Length: 101
Image (cartoon, helix red, strand yellow):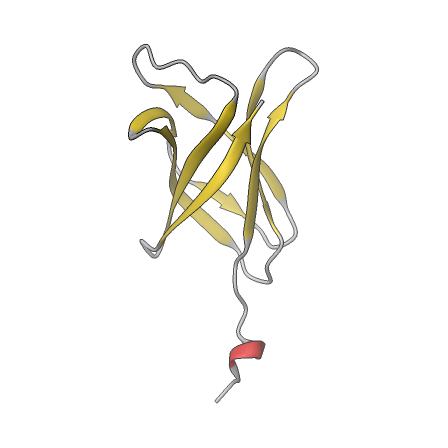
């Protein structure tokens, strides 16, 4: 049997980037050794859903992708710490803190 160290795993490092064109958004970089398919990503603060992805995003090992986000009602996305909830294709979830700027 392969040891735990030999099993390929995904590892996403996500953050918020401010673009030169005035557009900003969420990105994720896969620093693991296996692909990651994000079924959904949600940005929340204080229990309120601020933004969520539309459709799933496939991120190869070693790749970095921007994730398109959809506004939720009139919820503004102000600078500060927010919660990012990722749901993968295997339905496992991961929650991270990100800084919106």
